[in-house]
Amino acid sequence: MLSDIVDVVMRSGKMVGSAKGFSVSVKGTKENLVTSMDVENERFLRRELTALIPGSSFKGEEGDEARILEKGYTWIVDPIDGTANFSRGIPETGISVALMKDGKPLAGVVHNPFNGAMYCAEKGKGAFKGGIPINVRRRPLGECLFFTAWSAYDKSISSKCFEVSESLYPQCNDIRRIGTAAVELCMLAEGAGDMFFEARLSPWDFAAASVILEEAGGLVRSLDGPLDYENGGPVLAAADPGNLDVL
Image (tube, rainbow, N blue to C red; front, top):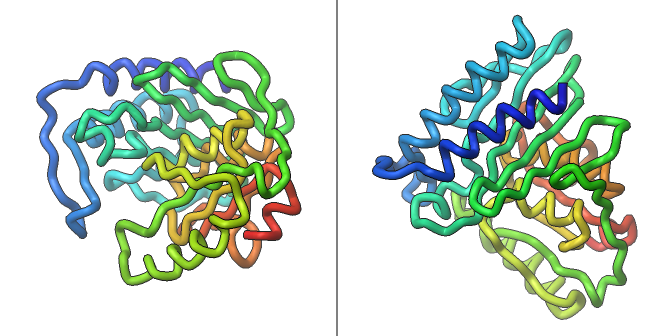
């Protein structure tokens, strides 16, 4: 099944990577953008993925927000994670596809169509990038790269996010903000990054990458326990348990 998902995402990536002349509009706040390519790609992914598992449910960012099935399979999809980057020609985006079984994450695929990076994992079978096994690297706090953002879609809580950054920055090596949570979490999985925090993410932002990171030996959770795959919320992640405690 994982290879079938990767195949669908690869075909999806070719569409996104070659897209031209797409429209850009605002949904909700001025910071929250959607392009016609987001909508077209979600439509493609919904058709192809649900065909892999007839009767499966589909929860996507661009309007297909079905609830996660307690019995059966559910897809959680972000057709373009990092739409602001995509809309400006910045090649840091991720196509994110997670497969849930009976309400629990089973598999995840994240693909950057601009540099070709393909991350994937299935529960209990390890994590891979381009078919090669990947694992986190456990570094001391002073050597850590910390990935974060400052709640662009809800700036009423941005001050709290800046407090976290201000507190952690003197202790770690440096901070990165790439603009796609799915790809950033995968960077932890491959050992390029070390820590991650966002105050509020939607399920499609983290569902696929959470499987990949955990299978690579990392840890990911919410503030008060397990991730909420239905509603989203805060996300904390780290390669090392001690650094997760710092967060």
